Length: 137
Image (cartoon, rainbow, N blue to C red; front, side):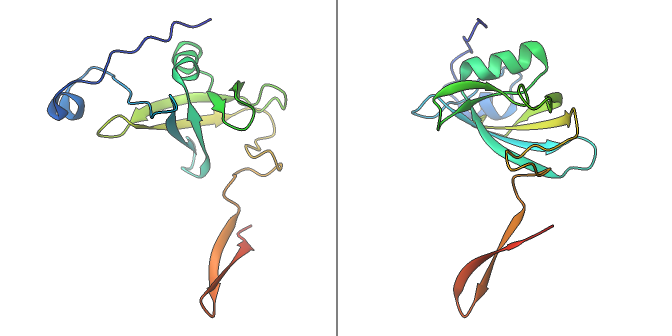
């Protein structure tokens, strides 16, 4: 099992925003949001969550790991499908409470469990003020 100890966030925002110490801010459930894009073309692939163990495994292995809120378990993305996500770049936002992973997807490339490249395959449109979903692709 990966070591899951990250430094506590600094007491001063300046240190968090301008310093060089990675101090991820996990929410009350122990999770941090992870936005995932394709390193080749910037396509938004998915949004997921990581706990400290998933984040540490991602850093150590270079393969994206997440925390499944629905299954309440660690999840190595693509482990069963073969579409592993190799992390090309891992960034954080100004207050270190969100992550941005730029990845290369192995296999035939789908990221979404529906078999699509991206989980964001529908747009919300309004007709007479009522929202509905339409396919993007």
